[in-house]
Image 1 (spheres, helix red, strand yellow):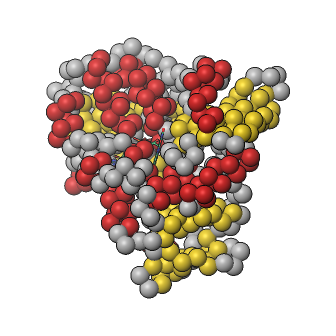
Image 2: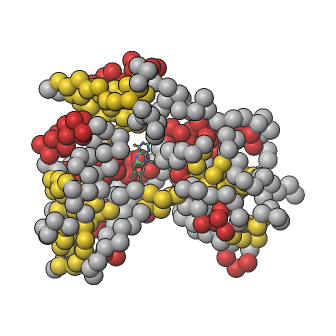
Image 3: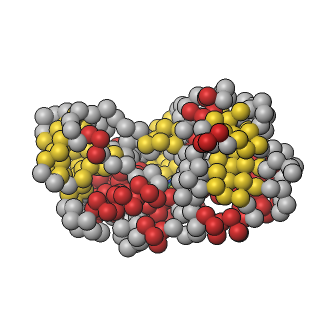
Amino acid sequence: MTAPVMILGSGLAAYNVAREFRKLDKTTPLTIISRDHAGFYSKPMLSNALSGNKSPEQLLMKSAEKMAEELSATILPHSKVLAIHVHNQEVLLGDDVRLPYRDLVLALGADPIRLPMLGDGASDVLSVNDLDDFAHFNRRLANAKTVVILGAGLIGCEFANDLLSRDITPIVIDSASWPLPRLLPQVAGDFLAQKLSAAGVQFHWGVTAKAVDAEGAGFSVKLSNGMTLQADLVLSAVGLRSRTELAAAAGLHISRGVVVDRHLQTSQAHIYAVGDCAEVAGWILPFVMPIMHQAKALAATLAGTTTALKYPAMPVMVKTPACPTVVAPPAIGSVGEWHVETSENGILAKFITDDGAMAGFALLGSATAQRQALTPDLPVVLA
Ligand SMILES: Cc1cc2nc3c(=O)[nH]c(=O)nc-3n(C[C@H](O)[C@H](O)[C@H](O)COP(=O)(O)OP(=O)(O)OC[C@H]3O[C@@H](n4cnc5c(N)ncnc54)[C@H](O)[C@@H]3O)c2cc1C
């Protein structure tokens, strides 16, 4: 029997590659192996599920069985891949099970970063990076009145906004001085912070959490400025680190992510990487739009038409209804400055390079209406 195209993981990257591949090739055997339940869900919905009144069960759109049927694929849920044997073209599961592949796609995602913290409650700090995490978080939210969120990035701000719909007070702390510091100029960040504060989010800027201690049924969080916060739960949202361990152990080239070329191929023939685990041309873009473009290009390559990845401009919507926000940050190393137009209801910030071109934007409040008009003026991310 022909060895299958094999995908490791069952997140958006894995299932988008599988769907795009099946559009082009209906017969080559396809195997999907995941250490989780392998059901299909949309990860972005985890940070607005509370306001949408969605239970974890409702967020699961399709079971692994249903996906297997739709994709004519063999799906192995709850199966952790332990190693990749590049020379035999096979992967190793528990109980010494070895499965051969024709081509292997790593869609392994990323792990939440855990900052070192003291205290007997530090190991109870939660993070939400998949549906099982969300189910756990959701159970722990019953009766919670206050949640401390570590990190005022995109995910931290989205969860903060979402918790308000449950009448829970989010207290967000960050070492920076405004939210989304890597995506927004200060004036825009201040605007977002002010809108979120008016809606009920509390912020502490320029601080880190030193220790988390269990206290009664909740926690006390000691900050670097000497303050102590009380909370029913602590949620960490300080960023992600690509899962590179399997690739590294197999001798593949890794940097911050699994390094791939414009064809999504790793340093090893017949092994590809996509999604949050992949570093393409120096970029790790942990968002849905890049995954869609990767999936289309890789599926074509796997189906026999070698296709290079291209990225258009890909603005990201931040799901903070208290202050609708769309960001298209300038490429790292862009030289120029932010030009900001402020009105009572919005902020329109354009990053203009020294030669007068717009390299990025941040649109907040009423200025988000400009998104369609401005996006065509952004540079493509990968030509
Ligand atoms: C709360 C939240 C909200 C977000 N909102 C947005 C948004 O609004 N817009 C946007 O563009 N992006 C958003 N993102 C980012 C986006 O959701 C991710 O970029 C995307 O879902 C990543 O998909 P992935 O398939 O690469 O990784 P994952 O979904 O993490 O999938 C990784 C898979 O690999 C499996 N796996 C790992 N190790 C092994 C192993 N050894 N063996 C077998 N299987 C393994 C896992 O079980 C999992 O199935 C959000 C992210 C989060 C966390």
